[in-house]
Amino acid sequence: MTLLDASGIEVVYGPGCPQCVESTGDRAGTNQCHRCGSIVACADADIDVEAGEVLGVVGESGSGKSSLAEALALDRNSEATVDGEVRYAGYDGNLLDADYQTRHDLRTGEIALVHQHIRDGLELDVTGGGNVAEKLLAAGWRSYENVRERVRNLFEETEIPPARMDDPTGTYSGGMQRRVQIARALSTEPDLVVLDEPTTGLDVSVQARVLDTFRRVQREEGVAAIVVSHDLGVVRLLADRTLVMHHGRIVESGLTDRVMEDPHHEYTQTLINSVI
Image 1 (tube, helix red, strand yellow):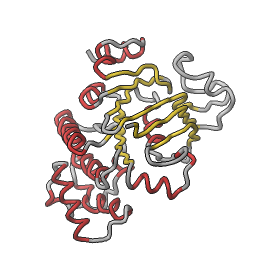
Image 2: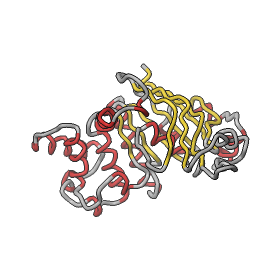
Image 3: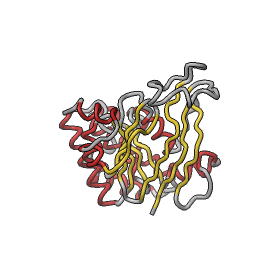
Image 4: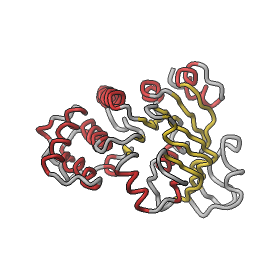
């Protein structure tokens, strides 16, 4: 079953003009419009995600992958203009045009975003348990005992000591903070989780633990995911299919093993050769 179907996604930072899309992209070698100076973070992006599937999105910094991820997760950026269509199973119409209540329902239920920067996803002066509980309360949970039990179970699932539930999140290690974000994202049993650079700033050994935890929980829960990363190793470990972005455009897509072992686009070849 197709869970998410997006077409023509376009994210522009700046005033925008009729020349923006045609004067940027892979062929132009830039994502900045020469006429108005706007940054076309992504354009002409078509995405579909099946239930239970993990889709990887790779590219260097500035390729537009984070902007695309935020658009798909309905995380509106006041500095950007977002166009295109995002359709989600069970909901009618284009969700980019949806009212606040519809987007709120989706963001607290079916779709979750794990932010690249910890401070965008967690309140560091709030306890780890409180960060997770806040999303449960927003989703309509009211029983203190049930919320507490759910948080404890999520901490155990994501390998965070439940004894740390009442400690401020700012006292946690970077790896634990990342796992709190994952626990928060999974708290309302979403169908789709979007992870933006899930291993940023983590040591290699900590990265492995975070990724192994997410992969195990994702498979056990049957959650679909979009994993955005500049790290090919992360995407190769987690993703069934992979999209490659360059200068704000998707330049290649396919099964992850095919893209990694037999890249067709020159940029993908360069990207892969740079880590061999």
